[in-house]
Every structure is written in structure tokens, then in C-alpha cells.
Image (cartoon, rainbow, N blue to C red; front, side, top):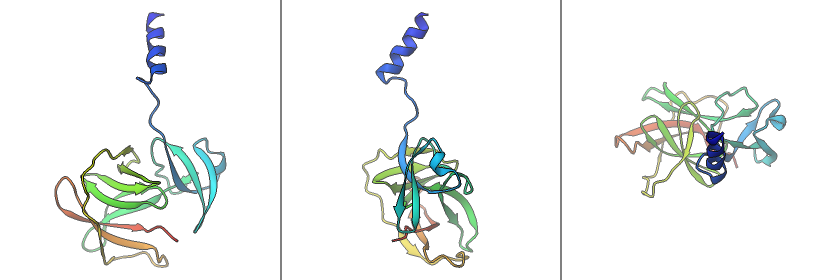
Length: 166
């Protein structure tokens, strides 16, 4: 009984809390309006988006909340790795296996499995530069490639993703 009381006190004090949930936008898949994470469906320049409160980013491109997918590519345009992103995200940098992006006014670290955490740094981040895309998917005018810094290694890596539509 004492352990239960201690647990409840920790929970109510905020020392023990549910995972941080962040409101981000995704493309609505079938059933998005009924998904418990969905807060609302809103108009967007490219149709509609589902604004959802999430602790991790969805990774399934056929699910109820559909992410954008960013791909690190090699010099021949082959995919090295990919990350899920909210709609209207702006990639900024890498750090190893994580991608730093700006979405919904926040700077977020995203891992390949959809894990997300807030960027706590105050460092200035070198700007990305546009580069030509090899093996660019046909029929999508919004696909861009950018050279982004890796804040850990100092290397430059190339990311292919769908830029926000306007």
C-alpha cells in the first residue's frame, strides 16, 4: 500500500509522467479522424492534414497518420537511410542516425524508427544548401535534395525529401 501511495504522489507531482506528446501534422490516411491521436483535420494547401498529438512519429505510409519520408542518398542517388517527418518539415542537420528538423515552430530530433525529442541546443546550425537530385521520383515537383551538416562528424550528407507545398 505504501508503494502505491508513493507511486501516486510521484505521478501527481510530475516526477513520473506520460511520454511528451507534441502536436504535429500528418497526411490523413483511412480512419485518421477516428485515430485517438488526431486532434483535428484542417485544410492545407495540398489538401487536408491531420493534426495529431504524438509521442513518436508514425512510420507507416499506409496508416491512419501518414508521414513524409526523408531519404539520405549517396552520390548515385541510392537510398542509404530514411526518416519519417511531419508534413511541412524543414530538415536542418544530422547527428549520426538522427535528423534535426523544424516543424510546427519546434526544432526536433527524429530517429529512423520515429522516436522524437525536442532540440535543446542553442548552437547556430549551418544552413543547408540545395544540390541536384539523382533518381528523383517522376511527377513530384516538390522533391528537393539538400546538403546538410552532420553536427557530430562534421561531414556533409545529402537528404532527399518533399518540400512543403504552398
